[in-house]
Amino acid sequence: MGLDIIDSHAHYDDKKFDDDRDAVIASLFESGDISAVINVGCDVATSKRSVEFTEKYPNFYAWVGIHPEECGKIDDPDAALAGIEAMLSHPRVVGIGEIGLDFYWDDPARDIQERWFRAQMEMAKRSGKPVAIHDRDAHGKCMEVVCDYPGVRGIFHSYSGSAEMARDLVRRGWYISFSGVVTFKNAPKVREVAEAVPLERMLIETDCPYLSPEPMRGRRNDSRNLVYTSARLAEIKGMDHAEFCRAVSDNARKLLGI
Ligand SMILES: [Zn+2]
Image (cartoon, rainbow, N blue to C red; front, side, top):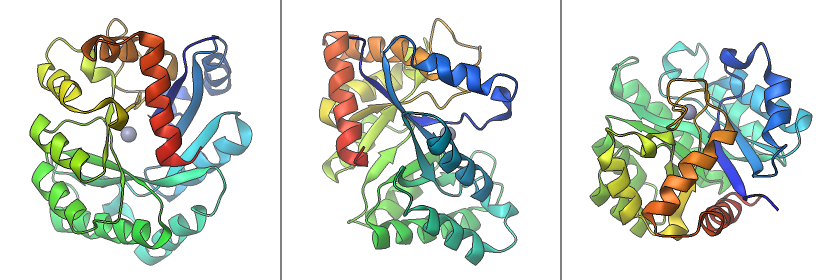
């Protein structure tokens, strides 16, 4: 038996997989280490694509949602939100993502991003589904929005905030997801967060094709590289590697109902 690893956040719809998508996805499951992959949408088209993947590829699930960097490009917001909400009834759709705030580029404007974030948090409240949150350089505002929806639960994906904020999120019932960044030499803060977050609230992800862990950093990422990410996290937690993977995948199954 291999390791039991669930990739909680992947973008196999990305154009970097256009030349060899089917082959890469088939190879993910050859070693027996990867149990499931959750592909994540960033707009209506890629959300639809994520749902299609669940019908085409075994062990695939989907997040559907509008990413903060995409929300400014949408002509008919009501139709887009209704489209996302309709996808939630698909049996392989686990929740709403990725949603949130990205204040790195400030494009679209912050108030527009916040409006979309809140609209999708409302959707989560109505549907009872978990959310996957993208928070880049917007920790304070993300926390404020999350606190306005105490019934909504989910994941902060590729978490980049402080250990203190992570502890606060955990107290409020949230999960913290770690990507390949935890293996980077220049990311001691993320390792500090990994020490602070209890095992039962940890998840792992690739965010592929981005964020390849060491020693694959700089190359196109895929779910197989979670072997490196999980090994580093197991080391931080002082745990056996296989035991760590099983525990974290059980967290994903519990939160996402898969
Ligand atoms: Zn992502």
